[in-house]
Image (cartoon, rainbow, N blue to C red; front, side, top):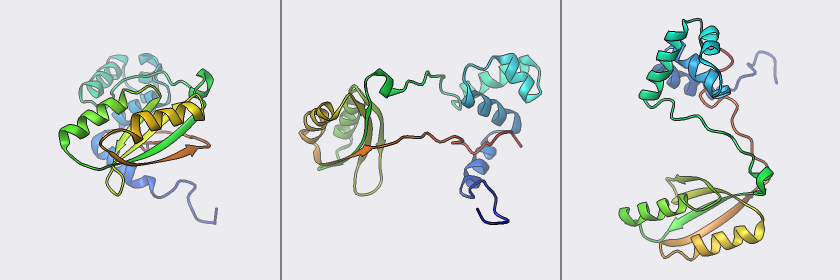
Length: 177
């Protein structure tokens, strides 16, 4: 790092600014705390944010009602449950009928091991993030569920050597403000 440069990458500023346009400081801090640990008790949220427990509860409920907070999920390490191979599969379709695409992506998202399905702009139509017990199972899934599908024109599979989720996806940093 050079002298005079911030340790925080500049590209996060637009993200944080966009989030701040939609959340006030109290809501942003509630979201930040719950992103760090969704099990944080309401009293601890209230203390950390500096509001009454009833206010923290009302703010959290309002964030859920507005669709900002969409759930609280357990994070499972796929490797610890026998799904140690992670891959990204780019999928290019031969036709783009909306109903067919919708049915395809719904079926794809329901496949065991599929973590995410991204609809893309660009050369490829979808990027599928998946986990598998090994290369044989991955090969079978790609060949039987993707490459041989009548809508699919092309697939390209990339193996993931390491996965690190973002530590501050909303650019909220260590504290609100």
